[in-house]
Image (cartoon, rainbow, N blue to C red):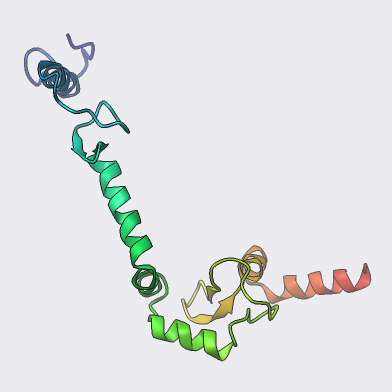
Length: 154
């Protein structure tokens, strides 16, 4: 029975949401052998005990883990419009260290620093230095003031 009196009747005196819900319950209950996904029992089973959404997400995650270099190339191209070769050239040019603090990356790799207005790539930074520049709104005056503050209060 439909409880949505304000909605248009779709079928069997029910709105479309209620009709679809009752149809799913009928289909799921009519076949006791029908597998239900472990992740979302209310959704349809796709494969490997998962619904289609989770199965797709797992497949994408597995591909990214099996192809890390291609995944990085895709991301660099999508986000910064540079190739993996250009990224590696920057990395070689900077001797594998951050352009600001001259330290090797703490995590996986150096991140691409770019101007948010022009989208021009400036260099590769460690995540700490990239965060510092981002928190200063890319304003050199704020960074100079912070340097002066540190020097005066050291």
